Amino acid sequence: SQALHAEIAGIKFDDIFLNASGVHCQTTAELDELLATKGTGAIITKSATSAYRAGNPSPRLSKIPLGSINSMGLPNEGLDYYLDYVTTKQADKPMLLSVAGVSYTENLDILHKVQDSSFMGITELNLSCPNVPGKPQTAYDFETTERLLTEVFAFFTKPLGVKMPPYFDIVHFDDMAKILNKFPLAHVNTINSIGNGLWINEDTDTVVIKPKGGFGGIGGALAKPTALANVRAFRQRLNPTIKMIGTGGVVNGRDVYEHILCGADLVSVGTQLQFEGPSMFARLEQELLAIMAEKGYTSVDDFRGQLKIIE
Ligand SMILES: O=C1NC(=O)NC(C(=O)O)N1
Image 1 (cartoon, rainbow, N blue to C red):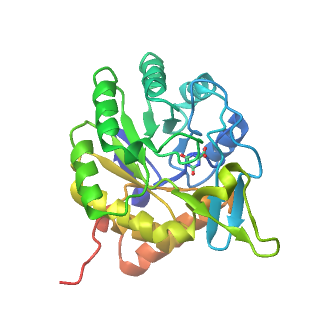
Image 2: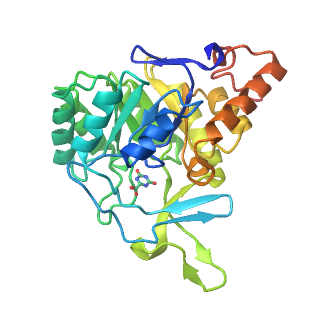
């Protein structure tokens, strides 16, 4: 709809909603369902590694009060599976291909393959998976992130965005934004789950997921304050040519509205989609449009980034 539109890397989106990578997007059946879902302006694949990965042992995802905890461990069908999908379906709806090498060189290998493929959509480099045992979240290593993006942009000429972990320090916002502003990024997607949280089952005094002794990424309503802060902080610091995908804590239309107030161009939903299913998108759209009507806004352009502070 005209009211809920956006543009990234010259690609026009008729709706601002998409799934958060990892949720409802591991198989072609799941992706096809999202593709057909009213309210999705785009869809994104599960982060692809070069080859198929089984991921961490189950239970590896749990619903918790006000959110979720997961340590999936990048289970996915492998790059070729998703490249085939996005390449064949890219005419139906804007596609985002998420990629996540589990090593520095794997990230480069994957992006060379994407560069040489016939995929013309947006590639999103996931620099923030917290759940591969023994592997740090790349984007918490500022020097490595800058070095990697420098090497990537030496050969990658297609639209590229990055999926970032949450930061919790103003100087980190400043320093990472300075790095990201050096590159012709299509977008920054923030936040990934809040890494390495812990939840305890009160009946059994036991953790609720198996991998890593129960440590996993936190998503859902619990993550909203951190998500909004990261969208706002990067929007304030990044070149306007770098668009924002807001992710984290979206449960209802008001949460979507707040992400847009903080500067989001697109809004992606993970935890709530996981538990409500794709019909959620029509609900979010209806709730957001109702809020906009109440405030006299006819387009997201009327209020994007217009969060007010107390002077
Ligand atoms: O980037 C990721 N974020 C998460 O919260 N979980 C997945 C995963 O573990 O595969 N990856």
